[in-house]
Length: 176
Length: 176
DNA sequence: CCGGGCATGTAATCTGTTACATGATTGA
DNA sequence: TCAATCATGTAACAGATTACATGCCCGG
Image (cartoon, rainbow over all chains, first blue to last red; front, side, top):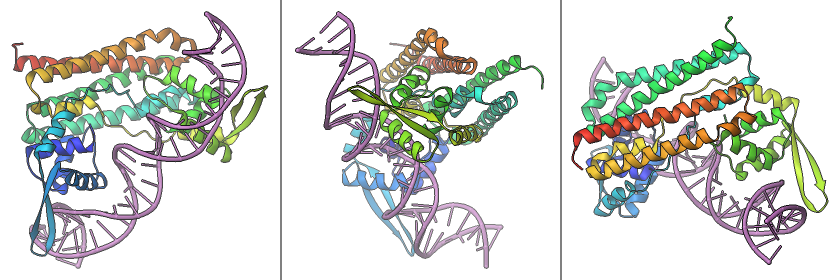
C-alpha cells in the first residue's frame, strides 16, 4: 500500500487538492502513517500524466490557484486492483525491540529507565488516540472505525508487552 | 537504531566478517528486522574509515580472503552512546491496517478473505518463531530471550486483534 | 559435475523525508 | 500587525533493497 493507492483511495470518496489530501490524511491516518507534501505533490503530477486522475485548476482571484484532482475510471481500476494484492506480513520493527536486544550493555538503572520511558510514550500515544476518537467518529465509516479500534488495541497490547519486560527487569534486580 | 549501531552491537560480542554478521543477524534478528549485504559491506567500510572498527585481512590459500572486523574503543563509545539516544515510538505501520481502512471498497467476501489470509500469515509467523526457540536459546542472552518473548507476544496480540476484526465482519454479514 | 555454502562487493533503483522557496488571505 | 491557514512545488538527502558480478571449496 503505497502513496499512490492511498491518494486514490481518498479520491474515491471525493475530489480534492493535494493540500486537502494531506489534511484528510492527518486526521484519519495520523496514528499509523504520515505523508508529506514532498511525496503527495509529485505523486499527483505523475498520476495525472498516467491518466489515473484529472486535474482542474481553480483560479480564485489573487489567491493561489487550487488544483483539484478527480479520480478517473483507470484510477478506480488501479485502486481496486491494489486492494487485491496479497498482503505481506511485516516484521515488528520496533526501536524498543532493537534496544532490548542489546540491554546487556546497559546498567540495571538504564534498562529500567529505557523501558519505563518507552512505556510512557506508548501510553501517551494511546491517550492521544483515545482523545481523537470523536474526530474520527465524525469522518470514519464502519471499517475506518474498526481501523481505529485496531490501533487502540495495538497500543494497549504493546503497553502490556512492555510491562511484562519491566516485570522481568524488576525480578532480576529488585532493589532500587 | 540504524545499521551501524546494530553491527557495532554484534561486534561488541566478538570480531566477525560481514558475511558472519549477516548470518548472526538472520538467526537472532530475523523476526523483527533484516539486513542485506548491500547495506552491511558499505557500512563496514565506512566504519573502518571512521575508526569505529579495524579490519584484518585473513588470506586463506586460494579461497576468498576474509575481512575480519574488530570494534575499536571509539566504536564501543559510539555504540554505548547510541543506546542512550531516546527512543521514538513508531506508528503501527501495518499493511493490514491500510487495507482495512479501505475495506468499504471490497465485497463482504473479499473482506473476509483478506482478513482471513492475514490472520493465517500472522499465525504462520508465530509458529515459525516458536520453532526457532531452541536455536535462539542457544545463542541468546537474558535480554535477547526477553526480546524473543516480546516478539511472540506481539504476534499473539496481533492475531487476537485480527480475530476481533473478523468477528466484526461476521456480525455484519453472518451468511456465507 | 553440480549445488550449496563461503566470501566480497557495486550500481541501479526505490521510496520517501526534510528543508527550502514563495506568496496571498483572514481573523485576532 | 502578526500568526495561522491556505496553497504549491523543488532539491537535496537518506536509507535502504534488488539485482548484478565474481569466484573458490567441498560433499554427494
